[in-house]
Length: 317
Ligand code: FO1
Image (cartoon, rainbow, N blue to C red):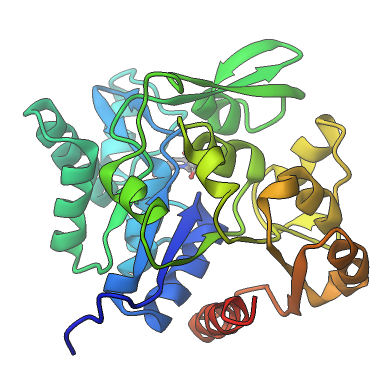
């Protein structure tokens, strides 16, 4: 079916695991040409001479159906000979790279070194993995999430993996934010004439969504477009990752309502889990529409059902 030029367009902003699950659901519900997926790249870092892009890779592997569900990152059916040998040779082993995962980092690093942009390289990987629509980096420029803690500042992966999120967070900075530009795909979706909604996926608001928002012009654009967010906090807890610990340390109420208030005037709509239905009235009183549903996505059907419910609900806003 040839694409209607005025078909509604959806822009999904995603970090790691939670966001990837919803984008998988959205990719089953929406035609590829109506969905733009934008990945956080603030977690990216150079390691062992390789360019590692964790949130992009979580999206690639999840959309390709080969993600490692036990670990929550990397590929399924992994082997670890590279890591065993690296250890034997006295290399850094705090960041685990599986043998199959290593091939992807190697090809990406090679293509970037040859002058490819992160968007071009990511689109090449999507093609090789048979993924549609494309996963798009939020920017092709360097932007690094820096975590400020009571023990000083830490590069994101040092905080998240090496220190296992133990340090007490006092704030987050995004190094390079003023010179980085949104990627072409991100910018064109944000300015799409038929943009129906921006969907902030259930990712960590502070270290997965905030880097995306920190790019020049993004927050301003989001404030003038229909934006909905899916709560990453359910009954006061994050399903995965340190969002709830961060909220406590950042003195933000660790509730779905706290997340909604953190996003503030950006939001036109907020998706609550049934466990947090009691916040709906107060959120609606702020002028933010709510959808209350089962937001825990255990199976592919859960992902597709939630995506369907959200797209249907967006069309009532
Ligand atoms: N997370 C860990 O907790 N330990 C690891 O050893 C680790 C390795 C790793 C390798 C590739 C990759 O794409 C992700 C990896 N992650 C690891 C997860 C990563 O730190 C997080 O996915 C994000 O940066 C936060 O969403």
